[in-house]
Amino acid sequence: MIQIHIHISLTHCIMFLLKAWRLAAFGTYGYLNFTKAGFIEHSKNFKAEDMKVRLDGKNCIVTGANTGIGFATAQDLASRGASVYLLCRSKERGEVALSKIQTETGNQNVYLEICDLSSLSEIKSVSAKFASKGTPLHVLVNNAGILENNRITASEGFELNFAVNVLGTYAMTELMLPLLEKAAPDARVITVSSGGMYTSPLTKDLQISEEKIDGVMQYARNKRVQVALTEYWAEKYKDKNIGFYTMHPGWAETPGVAKSLPSFSEKLSGKLRTWEEGADTIIWLALQPKEKLVSGGFYFDRAAAPKHLPFAATAGSHSIIDSIVENLRSLSGNPS
Image (cartoon, rainbow, N blue to C red; front, top):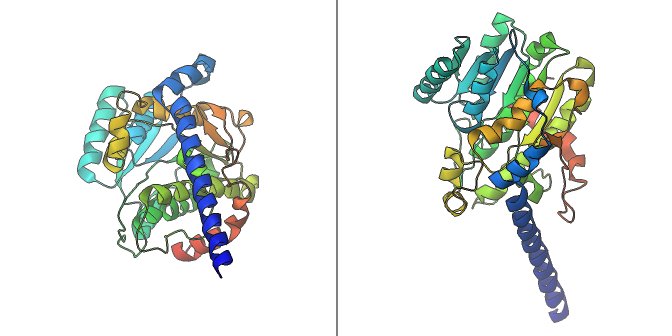
């Protein structure tokens, strides 16, 4: 019994040390690549002509568009002549964002739709509103996200992080497919993931079974699901001529980061990316010819990026995505 106990304790110790090492390695990797300094270094390889594209006549939806990366994305798309729909939870903050974008871009074809992405009923309602118009959707940007450090139950009974980051993203994308098909072969879905997903394998425990919640770990899990989901969509809908992409914006100085990770935000003050730098690859993905991109791919700073880091113990975990999708389909009431 003593030998067994020692063996188990040693195993746990080794697992703890490996996890600590992986997190430390990720922190170093992130500091070198995900900060403003990383963006400046990577931008030396950017091609100016990639961004010289107008979007007149194109229709775009950006979720979580009232501030941060979502706002910067919506503003840039509007500046290129696109009709842009801001999906925001707060009517007050959304109206401020709407007015600012219209004024600064001169584009009056910018609209506000109120939708709480933690609520399936609201997602279905706003999707039905778009469907009734029948307008082709060229670009869907799944940007809305949350990192909540406390266990909070959303209005429909789901854990809040999961409700917004996973279930909301899944439902919004699936329900918008008919409008995306109308815009094919020009249609694309761009989901804003995070480098945080590098620290987590895919797991079926999507709403966290433990009572105490680790917001950072849950966020990493959610973002891993988004990457695996995008692979799933790319394969399932490959005949629909819709491109599916995920991207990592880097570490940007946004209100969400300041609220959810205050010590991180303070420690890296002045070293984090601007909203526009965080949105840069979203815009790049929206503008590039689809032949230049790989549907199902993960992108960072205008280039394809690995979905797994060496020794991170995440490779192979995507094999369970089919069962996760079945769960999401059941929870969302989506028949497809």
